[in-house]
Image 1 (cartoon, rainbow, N blue to C red):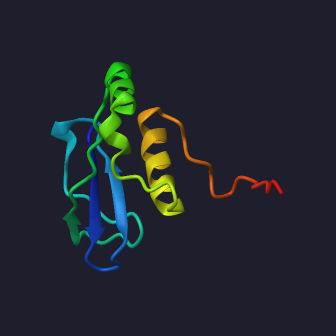
Image 2: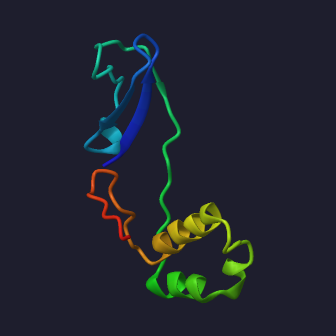
Length: 101
């Protein structure tokens, strides 16, 4: 079932439209204003990696080459990337934060 993304030329809002099959794809209308003036957008693509390839990427010593342990932004970027490889979700912005002091 394809999902296509469109941007409305009238209200400039983005719409995602699900079609039940490829043969079902027809002229869509904006979900926000009802206009037929829609331009198709290029959607993001997700790639699937095996657990083995993710663990190999985590064990690769070259992954640590650009990290400056004295720069918090550098360490945070590495942690986000490593969390993605290990499939650890980042904390929600709405999650409570606890300060240890």
